[in-house]
Image 1 (cartoon, rainbow, N blue to C red):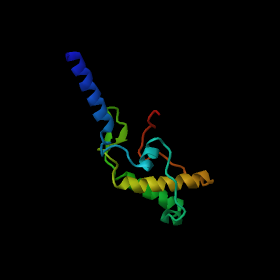
Image 2 (image 1 turned 90 degrees about the vertical axis):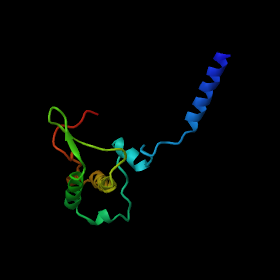
Image 3 (image 1 turned 135 degrees about the vertical axis):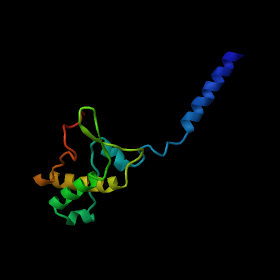
Image 4 (image 1 turned 180 degrees about the horizontal axis):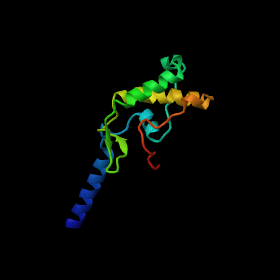
Length: 124
């Protein structure tokens, strides 16, 4: 009797878990999922970013990254702090990095994406 009750409880719990909605703080935006894996968003043909120079885009990207909260490890290595979902300025950062990636892929060496904060690159 107890054994069958436990099996029934487990089956109902598994079914409820499978039907539960995705939490709102998870990455539900395809662009951010690509961003987290290092694959940048595409730059649309009608993007206003295409009218800006590469130097302007690089400077705007760095200015936006300066608005993202930062911390330091015990060894003094800086890192960005994210609370929950992406910050509002990350939409623009993502678009700028997509445009810079497009330019770099088409031969503009000034469009290379350098790390936005000092220090060594995180191991990947």
